[in-house]
Length: 128
Image 1 (spheres, rainbow, N blue to C red):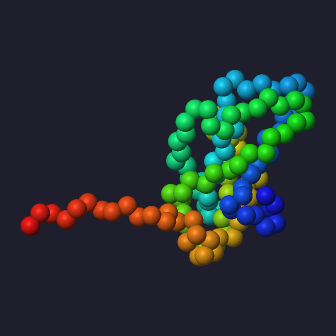
Image 2 (cartoon, rainbow, N blue to C red):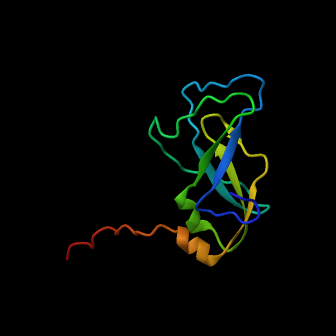
Image 3 (cartoon, one colour):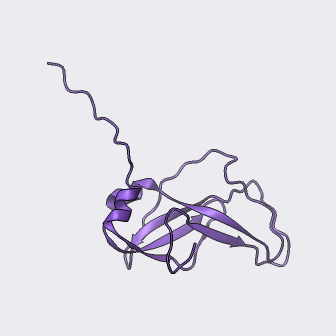
């Protein structure tokens, strides 16, 4: 992903081992979720769920990195409006957050593309 023209379908971050020794996962995953926040607004939480074994973390030698996909919780799209937003990524298992959020400009078209495509039917009508 680039910061100058981010593609919201291909969001990724680099997890870099900046320590002097090899890092070994202790049952951790490299699951990364992102929260959309209006520029200057309050950061909201994200909803997520996963099955153990997905996004397994890999050992990283000093200076080595792993590029991992960033997931945006689909329920966030119903509450956003066109305009400037910040995308805050969090590496869930390791409790790490990106220091610098990604600045994105959301358009009505981008928002429509990310809204859930299938609407679940409501409850049946009451009996007559």
